[in-house]
Length: 596
Image (cartoon, rainbow, N blue to C red; front, side):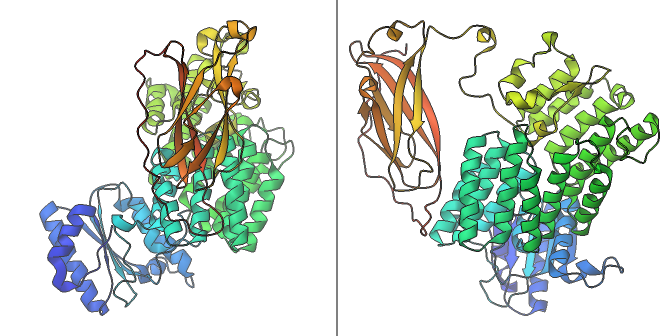
């Protein structure tokens, strides 16, 4: 992922750029380093026909004379935002000089203390532009991020955080699993805690509430044990958002997260906690939401957080559009003026989401803008298809289902459509309302997650009748929070429905065969559900592990059912764990009979 070089190594640097698109240079006097960067930039630009842009970290605070006395964090944020805002959209060569490189160990993007080097890498993740970085550290290896042979856990965390911020968590999981391993090998418990936190945040975004709750609790306790107050504040805030996602906001927990952020001096974290606290209370009668949203917007602008500003404008506009003006908190005039103000806020949010490359926020803003502004909607007959396309681009099927509902109007009988009922808690869907014009008033919390269909949810044709005639496999994890190299017990039951023949007769002596599809052991390889099948699952590394259970009838050799389950393994708490390969095991025989 990186290269450390001097002026005599241009050829090697060029090869590195061709392979990875990233160059980090340290060592030697400033003039030598700058000359080397200039030479490489010219060579790359000439061959590829790209424009070259230079940015001096020392100059970042001098762009606006009124902003004197800025802190290093504020200067660094300006650099990252400049790169994220314009340079990664179209292929180009970007040279950033003067990057502090005493350590590459920052914390993920979106937090106050992030390493500038790591955040620059995150800004250019998935970009086609070349990034050349000159560091201020005089040591030869100080700025070098390890190659893929020894992944840098902080850089992996930054990339995963970028994916989550964009609302596209699909690529975050593999990055976080590699980050956990990298931090464990390095013995960095602080890094492990941030990896577990982000994994919990990813699970919340995917609608996996129980997994998210367990991981976030683990991260919070580890943050406390290592004295990482900013991390503890972020974990408390994410746990509070879990409650909000189920339709029951917890403003007190969000207020506590805000106090923790302020105690740690984390202005950005405090602004985010302030935003979600305001959103959680925005629909309360008499709450001064207009004043609070304005305050939050100012706080985000102080720390140059474009994404936070965009979500603030989004929820401010949504509140304004849904309030009739009788609450006494809004200073705008009649309905037309309120609508114009909401339109202005929606447009501002949409522009910022586009600049920040956040398709998740962009899609939801487009949808709410279309629903609240009929004139805007009917200017484009393909409005629904356009919004659906943005949701589809990040794999958000739940978002597409909300667009379908908005296009179709109120369903007969008032029941939510199947595609929403199979994804969201009933308590959340009970808050779905409809305007006089027949447009949905989508619950705020619906945009906090991208839930997949719930396992075992009855199909569309089975919703009105219980599935009594089938038998199901039930798996129960008997030990909480599995950790590497420690056995965890898993119970397997075959549960017949009331209409199944086994419901009134003893369960036959079926065989349940267990197979690990990853770096884990499972013992014994076979069990008998009628006798209470119990397996011991021993993982050898943290992350997601997939297990396969095959239930067979030994009398006929028929495979009756095969199920797979994913189990998240959190890092062991005492210290670094170095993954070891499992003991060799002969492969399980493949069943020759067809599946029933």
